Image 1 (spheres, one colour):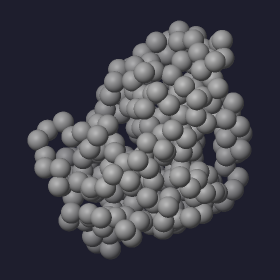
Image 2 (cartoon, one colour):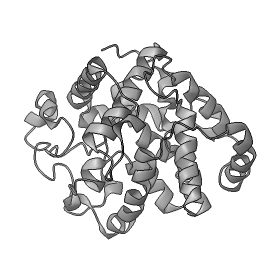
Image 3 (cartoon, helix red, strand yellow):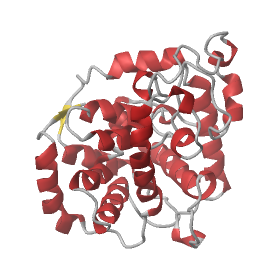
Image 4 (cartoon, helix red, strand yellow):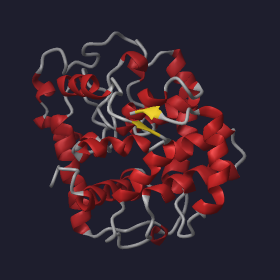
Amino acid sequence: MATNSDDLPGSANVIKAWEEFVEEQAYPVPHVKAKSDYRNYDNPARDTVREFYRENHRHQTYDFVRRKREEFLRLDRRQMSIFEALDYLNTLVDDSDPDIDLDQLQHLLQTAEAIRKDGHEDWFVLTGLIHDLGKVLCLYGEPQWAVVGDTFPVGCRFSSRIIYSEFFADNPDQSDPILCQQLGVYQQNCGLRQVLMSWGHDEYLYHVLKDHLPEPALYMIRYHSFYAWHREGEYDWLCDEHDRAMLPWVRKFNPYDLYSKSPDPPDWKELRPFYSELLKKYLPEKLAF
C-alpha cells in the first residue's frame, strides 16, 4: 500500500475503503437497510483496508504517538478557516468511487443535516459539519494509517475487541513488560483525558477546537472513532465518571456519522449561509492548524 499521502487518488482510495469497511463490515447498520444504499467496493478495496490496519496496528506505538503530538500539537503550521479546510478535504475525492459520487464535504453536510433534521442543539449540528476536518493532516504528508481508522489507547494492552487486533502482534509495545499490561503506564480509572490515543484526525482536531466548543462536542470529535469504547464496551478501567457521563453523547453522534449517507446530496450553495452563521457563533474566522 502506498503510504505517501501526496498521492491524493491513492489517499482517497484508502479513506473511502476504510469508511465503507466501517459501515458495512465492522459496524453494520443496526436496522434493516439495503446494502445497495451504501458505497460498495470490490475485493481489492477491502484488501486495502486490511493492509491499512496492518500498517496502523504495527506502527501506532506509545513512542510514535508521543512524537506525533510533539510534532503537530504546537499548531503552528498554518492558519485556516473552516471553509478552507473543507475545500482541502474535497481534494481527497476518489473519482473512481464505484457507487455514489460523494466527496468529503457531502459526507459532512449529510451528517450535519441529519442531526439538524432531528432537532438537536446547534453546536451538535456544527459538530457534524466539522468532525472530520482533522484529515487535513494529509496536507503535511502523513501516511493514511496515521490519519484515519479506529482509534485506541496506547501505552497499555491492546484490546482484542479492536478491529484486526491480530495485527498488533507486530507492534513492539506488545513485548514491552509494562506496555503489554492492562493498565500499562496508567492508573485505574485515571480518565481518558490522561490517556494517549492512537494518532489521527480525531485527536488532532480535538486540540485545534478544544477552546471553542461545548464539552460533549469535544468528546464526539475526540472519540468518535474509539469504537472499542463506545461500541464494544472496552477500556472502562481507564474511564472516570466524567468519561461515563460523556459516553452517551458519543453514542448519540455515531449513527449520524455512519448511517446518514444518501444518494441525494444536500445543496451546499443553498446551505452555506446557514453554516456560515453557525460557524461565526462558535469559532474564530481562522484557526491554528
